[in-house]
Amino acid sequence: MNLAYLSQVSTYSPFSSRAHAYQITSRLSKKGVNIVTLRHDENPNFAKVERNRDDIIKTLEKCDAIYVRADISLEEFLLPILRNIKKTVFWEVNSSTEEILWIIKLSRKRFLSRYYFKESLKERIRLLKKNAIRKEFARYVDLAFCISEPLEQYVRDVYGVARTALVPNGSDPELFKPNHRDRSVFRADPDDILIVWAGSFEYPWHDKQRILKVVREAKTSFPKWKFIFLAYPELLPPDLPDNVIFKKIVPYQGLSRYLASCDIGFLLYRGIHFQRLGNYFSPLKLYDYLACGLPVVVSDSGPQSGGVVKKFNCGILVDDSYESIINAIIQLAEAPEKRKQLGENGRRAIESYYNWERAASNTFDAMCSLIDRPLKLRRSS
Image 1 (cartoon, rainbow, N blue to C red):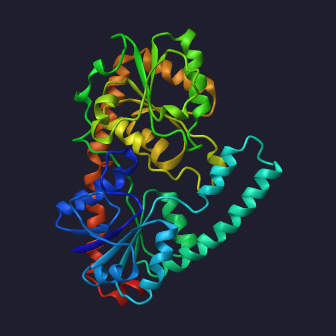
Image 2: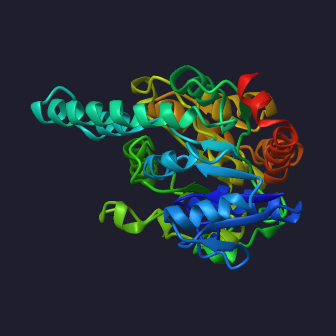
Image 3: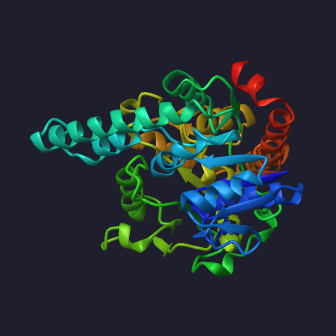
């Protein structure tokens, strides 16, 4: 199979934010898919094409299908091309166009201020334009890949895509392992409880303020709790207490050593009720925590955050209250055997389903099933 994989996100990944593109394309390549990416992609393993109309058309003529990772500018650029070229189109949708409105709401301290109203109004106008572009683009889509159930329903209802495939994210159980534990990476005592949060606090749905409250109050009440932020230090306040013993972004390929050396994984969301889809994420940090054998403390929301914890009994679910979070950590901190059991359960969740090999295989099988069918039948069924 020859596939044009068109994305604004690179498939060559020193960063966790590129994990999906890196993991899916590298595994598709191992299955015999010949991949062409846009010129900006640093991946040396794939052929490249310039992002201009003539070069894209010449490339598509030699490809069996086109795979587009959702991006409004890319979709708008491709529309005139798709009108004139009959190719199988796969569309990976990992967020809603309404996400920007959610970000604005979460970023404003006073949601009803005149500034919020003006910015919200502008974004709502942009949203209508984006949805119009996406609805037109969706007419050429043969199959949309979605990372969660709410997003899959959204793509059907809002964009009118008839055929979708649910392909949740995962972790790499060969790259992320419990036996990578090495406490020497942190300045911690052997009996300290290390609690890790990985990601970027630039996204306002991460409950930064509540996490920081836990950190500050644990300084005196729970002196053996130490906190690890695998995050951009510049997005953290300068006056953090000294129970934060590590704050740094770690390259994706070396992340396992840091996660596996901790005791508890943290994943808290806020403002989910502002989002019409609820929690539609398929959170990479959750799966990487579980792959490393960490029990997790997770907000009780979403089919692939709270749902995974419930199904596999691999952590403790919490509500938005500070007391709920503290009590969950106490339960895990004071029960090493419970941490071990929940961690083993989480590892099984990754090995049995929430892994990149399963995600890539699901993607590959779905693509093959459509490419083997006549185009006119695919779009009319």
